[in-house]
Image 1 (cartoon, rainbow, N blue to C red):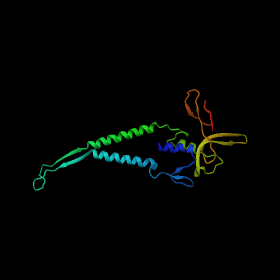
Image 2 (image 1 turned 60 degrees about the horizontal axis):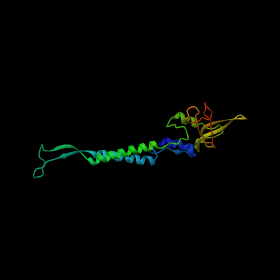
Image 3 (image 1 turned 60 degrees about the vertical axis):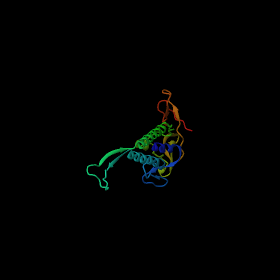
Length: 196
């Protein structure tokens, strides 16, 4: 979810790219796999979950002592103990985590860019620069519709990252299916490009 959100923000705001070895305006990758605002609460929940799980079951050893305080041979008993309050706290925490995931899954995601996950083909297709741009990846970029002149009279529109001016891609309805589709600047079927 964090990756999809950060990817989508590249179509909303002009941002520098996050790379392993950064140069110029580029940003370094996260020290931990997720941003701190996601990582700290998730690690805290994980630590609490493990601690509660350890509190539910534990080993108990009972030693019988004589009047002198010495253990009686063969009278020691070992058993597995459990804590019902820890079990209920663990169940309550897991239920809260489940509700949290359901709530997060129900939040509408307003995609402004085709979702890529970590698919390198989609990322590669979006990163091709205009012929007149020099190292756009070093600066702050935004994804959108970019017009490129071809010859003296023609121009073509592409969806890509650019450090220059980009137009927002508008979603239109497909005439046949009546569902929203993300259009390609080169019309295919009934899809048309509309920019703001």
